[in-house]
Amino acid sequence: MDATAPPATPLTETRPPSEPAAGNGNGEKKQPVFKVGPIPTDKNNAVSAAVWENEVNTGDCRTFTVHNVTVEARWRDVSGEWKSSKSFRGSQLYALIYCLQRASDWILAQRDPANQCPF
Image (tube, rainbow, N blue to C red; front, side, top):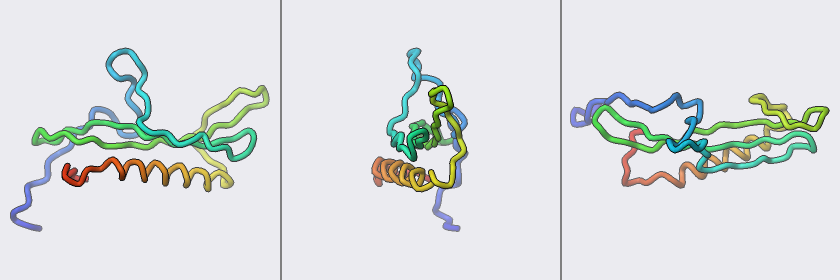
């Protein structure tokens, strides 16, 4: 370990990273900053990915923007109503990989090398 490196500081995120924030503070539901899909995998199924933006505060009063990704499978039931699921068929994985790659590309494009984000 380098003796000149600053000590690690704890990170604080305003909400758990696995769930999008409930709103934007003015009564509106928070929207993803980037979305891929829905990508149809057959006439009654589709997959999508959404990128959510959050602020993280470090113990030394620095703030960073981080991105979280949620994925979703959608399917149409016998009555024609669309339902949501977090599990995927093997035949949907190709479309899911595509959605995740596009989300990853977008997130990497948002990074500013001068920002020196610790993660």
